Length: 206
Image (tube, rainbow, N blue to C red; front, top):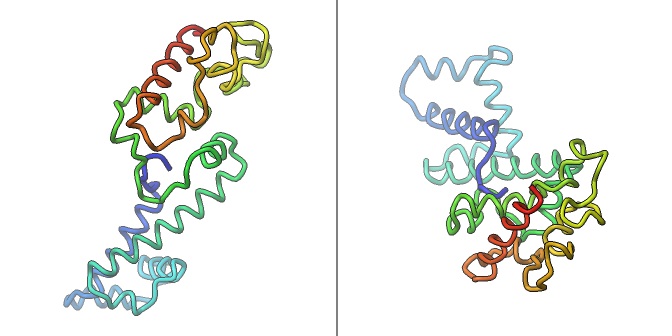
């Protein structure tokens, strides 16, 4: 979601479809024979089924290369998105990401990935996916003691560490909101301040 990249499976499917389209236009008699082969579960049959599953018709196959490539990529991206949403339906970290951030566009990289350093991007990503190194995000590791390592009073959740812990946030301006970490406007000084503050908080409980 954040990188805009497809998984290996769907990338391979796209390459397979584009290869069949290129082969359909070849003048080689051998290639034509292979494509006309009715070998059960052979490459041609599997690729034809894939094309059908992705709703790519003969009209699409007959389009010029650039137009077909765009259409095929769009359909494969759609299939990838549907699978990702389906597979992540019960994954809390992914649901937190999709719930708190603006709608993601398949194939489009989040703008903060291009504007921030790798370290800064990592803090944003970990916050969005609830992977910051706080106890509630790693319950199996800390299940016997979930108390905050800073104040020792409340459960050490991501929300508690970023803005609720009175030991860490004696100054109200240090509190980090959801909006600070989910905004796409990463040019504001508030975002850089939030990233820096989050790193300080994490160091204090490490």
